[in-house]
Length: 261
Ligand SMILES: NC(=O)c1ccc[n+]([C@@H]2O[C@H](COP(=O)([O-])OP(=O)(O)OC[C@H]3O[C@@H](n4cnc5c(N)ncnc54)[C@H](O)[C@@H]3O)[C@@H](O)[C@H]2O)c1
Image (cartoon, rainbow, N blue to C red; front, top):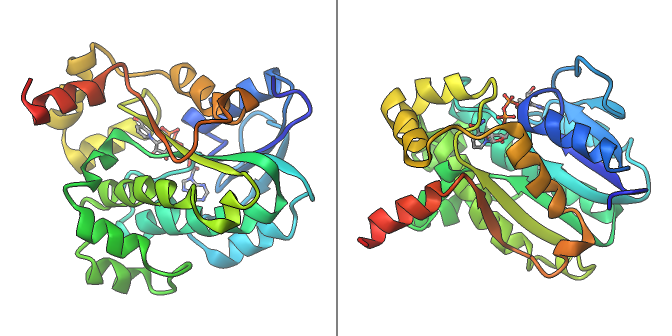
């Protein structure tokens, strides 16, 4: 179903991005992999990019082919490298890249943002999240930006809240909408990848263990990748601006608690 499609996948050297690339290739796609680190195994074309660095993203944009079918924004940081870096990679770099890639994406193409259950609280933190999303472009002083919006230890959470809100907004942004490019999010719960121990440092063992025990286990990369790729296919053409939790029922369980049933 992805035969002959060209898909850019960020975060291709590890975890969810790596599995998404392997699966896309097995489904017939050409993959342009993007990451800060070289993949151990060759996964189509690879371009080394630092998504926290505007100049590095600009260099990538100059190397893209004329026609791209989909962009999967998978790369992310847990927050252990600090708030400015985390906001840059998880939100501002992602958004800058996506807007830069958009003119290359064919009419009716797709953008998939890997968010997280961690972004669940965007409604509760609406004013701050709206203010972050309203920041223009790729702010040059990320440290000042984090201070301005009170973003510190929980930058991972804040970055994913912003990403979920922007996903809805982007689905209606003329840059995408005028050419029928869909923008959706996939929100995993805990998944067994190298980032998981880092979440334990940031949000604590108790929260991670509670999330896992609500659904019986952590997810695997093979449970996330097919959903990301489904959103790249024409079969999902009427899904736009949506967030699909891929978490074994974790979000439903949190909703039940919040709603009180
Ligand atoms: N694993 C989980 O429990 C989980 C849960 C919810 C959401 N997610 C999200 O899934 C996505 C993928 O995470 P993962 O679990 O595969 O983690 P991972 O650590 O295995 O992979 C992340 C990848 O992003 C790349 N990356 C980091 N900084 C970069 C930068 N500056 N420029 C370019 N690439 C960079 C890394 O090199 C790595 O290959 C992330 O956005 C993460 O927030 C993961």
